[in-house]
Length: 116
Image 1 (tube, rainbow, N blue to C red):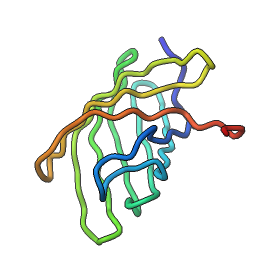
Image 2 (spheres, rainbow, N blue to C red; image 1 turned 180 degrees about the vertical axis):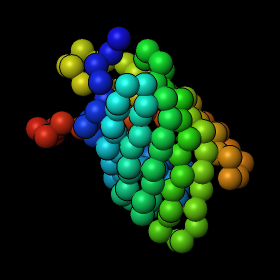
Image 3 (cartoon, one colour; image 1 turned 90 degrees about the vertical axis):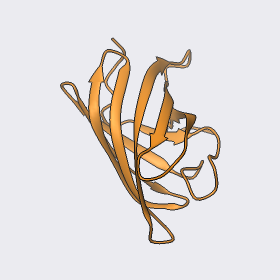
Image 4 (tube, rainbow, N blue to C red; image 1 turned 180 degrees about the horizontal axis):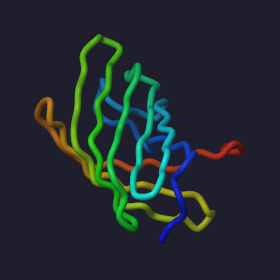
C-alpha cells in the first residue's frame, strides 16, 4: 500500500488542451480511511473540487470545476498511485468529461517545497 496522499500537493507535468488543467494548476489532496478529496486551482481553473475513493493504489473520483470564463465542467477519473524513485508520488490519470465530450490521460506529480 502506497503512503497516504493526505496533505500532498500535485501539479500536472504537461499542459492539457487550452482552457483545462495546466502546469500552473495545483491540487491539494486529502485522504481519510478510503475516502479521497482535493481542491485545485490555477491557470484556467478558478476553483475545482474532486471527491472519491481509494482502493489500494487505485483512485476513483469525480471532479467539478469553475473556469476563468465562468463556465463549469465535470467528469470522472481513475488514477493509479505510483511511488517515484525520489520518494515523491505520481498519479497516472485516465479521465473523461461528463459535462461534455472528450477523454484522455494525464500525469500529475507531487510538488515538494524544494522543487526546482
